[in-house]
Amino acid sequence: MLQEKNMKTFKKILIAIIAIVVLAVVGGYIYFDQKFTPEENYLTIENSSGEVPIKWLGIDKNVLLLPVKFPEDSTKYYMQFDTGSPYTLFYSNSIKAIKGILIENERAKASFQIGNTRIFSNEFKLFDYGKDEANDSIKIIGTLGADILENRKTMVNLRDNHVVINLPETPVEFRDKLVNFKFKKRKIIINASLNGTDEKFLYDSGTSAYELLTNKENWENLKSPNSKVTVEKSRSWGNTLTSYSAICKNTILLGDQKVSLNEVTYVEGFSNTQYMMMKFSRMTGMLGNKIFLKNCIYLDCRENKIGIN
Image 1 (tube, one colour):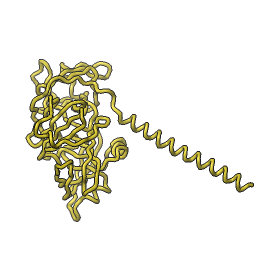
Image 2 (spheres, rainbow, N blue to C red; image 1 turned 90 degrees about the horizontal axis):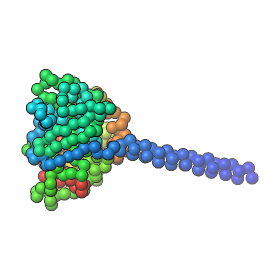
Image 3 (cartoon, one colour; image 1 turned 90 degrees about the vertical axis):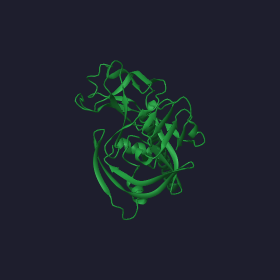
Image 4 (tube, rainbow, N blue to C red; image 1 turned 30 degrees about the horizontal axis):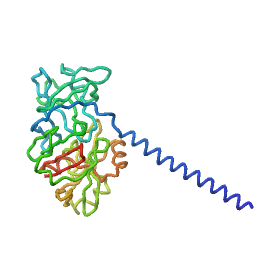
């Protein structure tokens, strides 16, 4: 009788533990789902841009910049094109002297052009970053995020150094080369094959100087034996990062298109949010611009189709 009673008590405890675990998993999913869900797109975008020239910073093409212009302002400003950011935003310390930007209630009201494309909003986010660049030859004032891609067709031609925003139709050269991708929470998540295994990658044009950023375990498995490791320190959004890069001789297969993977990197110093985002999305790593420097990328974020040429 006592043994039966103990067994019932044990079952109740076990059920309670299972219930707690399930609730924790569900609660964690809801938390991170909400955490990485951006607010509604606050941009209004008109016209196709035409070919907008890319300006690179650094000898290793560390940063991809696009020129922007404000009405009645002859100054050429630049914004970083960063598909890893869900928002287009301004750096509050770099826009103080720009008359075309009005700040109200910790948001910015502005209208500017990229090529022939006009972008405007009353709700631009501000980021406490940058500096007063009145005396700088290159005036970087903000980030162009993945919201400029949403429900639109875009071409990022890294081979010929230009970007086309808000294309009216799919270019002819890509019509037979399109494969599916996910534009989830304004993140470009690509399914591709690496070493014969299906993997998920995030295309992040903000990690411009790298081919593939991944975790240390994948890095160890992918790098060539006895490869020299290059160690570098850098700053990103206020964080000090230490990167470890090594030679890698692999190929990433996206549909029928092969892209050579010659270098693999892992980074120490990412924020917990960035690590959790990678883990939560079950991604192998982030593809930066460096792996596509010989390619042209077409992104249709209306039909969720991507092509590499």
